[in-house]
Image 1 (cartoon, rainbow, N blue to C red):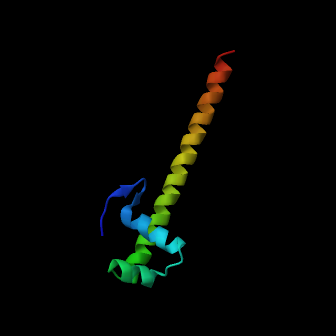
Image 2 (cartoon, one colour):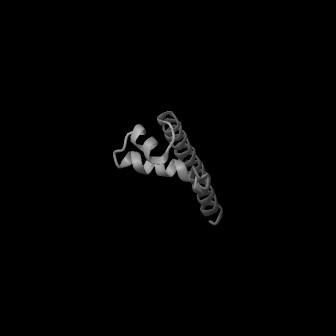
Image 3 (cartoon, rainbow, N blue to C red):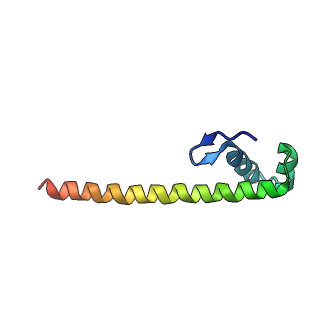
Length: 77
């Protein structure tokens, strides 16, 4: 399994997510990749965790920038 990154996801996590979205089971994905279905389940859970971290990061950034824009507009009067 290759360990390059795609945003917050490893390539393996992205591949597992893509295959799950297309309807593959953990066991089918495991057979395709050549690892155990437990490894696929763990990779899937970690991918979902990383997606949640990305969402939280974006929300935090939006809150920070929205407040900053509001304060700049208020200070420009």
